[in-house]
Amino acid sequence: MGAGLFITFEGIDGSGKSTQARLLAEHLRATGRAVHLTREPGGSTGAEDIRALVLQGDPDRWSPETELLLFTAARRDHLEKTISPRVAAGDIVISDRFVDSTRIYQGITRSQLRAEVDQLHALMIGREADLTFLIDMDPETGLSRAKGRGGAEERFEDFGLSLQQASRQGFLNLADEFPDRIVVIDGNRPQEAVSADIAAHMDRVLG
Ligand code: ADP
Ligand code: TYD
Image (cartoon, rainbow, N blue to C red):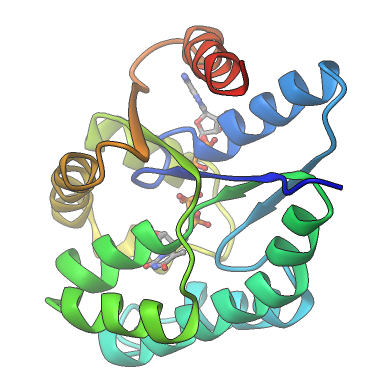
């Protein structure tokens, strides 16, 4: 079987990544493609265990350096157990977040560790997505949507609005840095308009 495709969704909390990843998976499955929907942190048994460590509890629970190591450990397990085997089998793997989130949160907004993020990525992961949809979103709306979900995984939302604002700008700068891979999608619209945009782009890529 030929190699599949690895697609990621990125953006601030509450921007609609999970919703749009699911809708893109439905769109592609309707055209007969084998699709595996996954997420970070998580996406494999070991990585889901690490997810609970990083997303729950006190905002000060981990330093940015420790967080970087935990997110990268989770990503390595996700890559080994889920992403690489499925892409090799010909599936389209869609991940809700990947290394761009680490470049922004641990690299820029939580701390200035961008060089360490890239070094660790080159050393232990060594793979970028084939295509990334960045859902751009007003930070206040995003934060209120994310908070509206409730639940225990609020450690990052608890860093507040200023982190969301800086993260949004960071993601837009990243899109300028990787123009061939990252497509910016306006998320400040009804979800059907956003998903139609993404599906149209995907159909063009797949020919
Ligand atoms: P993320 O994965 O980026 O945090 P979600 O997809 O979980 O975002 O969306 C956060 C919340 O906002 C959910 O309750 C979802 O139903 C809602 N939502 C998603 N997209 C839109 C949209 N375009 N307009 C209004 N609400 C939305
Ligand atoms: P996620 O569950 O995707 O949150 P949301 O659905 O609200 O967008 O991710 C949880 C948090 O983890 C999010 O605030 C960003 C953070 N995160 C990092 O800081 N670094 C990373 O490498 C990843 C993957 C996520």
